Image 1 (cartoon, rainbow, N blue to C red):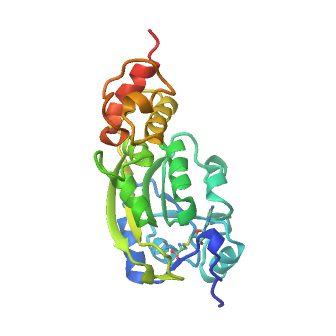
Image 2: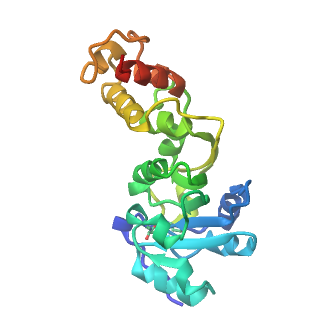
Image 3: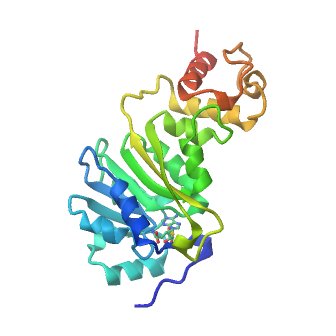
Length: 259
Ligand code: SAH
């Protein structure tokens, strides 16, 4: 069987290190036995082969590349309706995964790095259904997502994701583990939904405050948040990178409170 030709515009870097592939799949816990797990961008199936061995899981694949889809269908015995050819970012979960309101699922993948931030914003749009994510991303992106307040790489996705998920940077994978090798190091992260974290304000407003604050991250919050408030705010002389998500919740409530 011919291998899939790596297409740069689809972020295709195929993992050839089987040990790393196994470790990634082993990280996926499915603690609450949701069973349903969606693999983003299976490519030639290096993760898929280990996921299929875990018979307790109900695996669905979403892959945008026609050539990879054909490869997967030829080389793996996966039911027709478990391989979705299409764009994860445009996927209708209700229709394609047949998940109704409260059914939960997880996500795994060696993500296409050019859309990894968008993948995580999509996760946030479905945070009450997506309970766990194990993903390989560019190392810096992984570190940023897992980064704590006070670090220079702490940013928008760190705050937004940490407001709902417990996050762990698991391990680093070097370029030589891939074919073709990417120009950057890679990192594997795991996010597990923590239901004790209940956002005590409107999510959209929270997102607006966080994005505005980081938009001018070198400025003190009194200045950075001027575009959205004229109020006196707490933490006025701190910077966005110094606040944890709870402090952003506090700011959001104060800025948008209707008195
Ligand atoms: N999991 C494989 C491939 C990783 S490369 C491995 O580890 O070897 C990233 C994969 O994501 C490629 O197969 C690419 O075709 C796919 N991909 C890129 N953009 C996508 C999108 N928007 N939706 C779904 N899959 C996508």
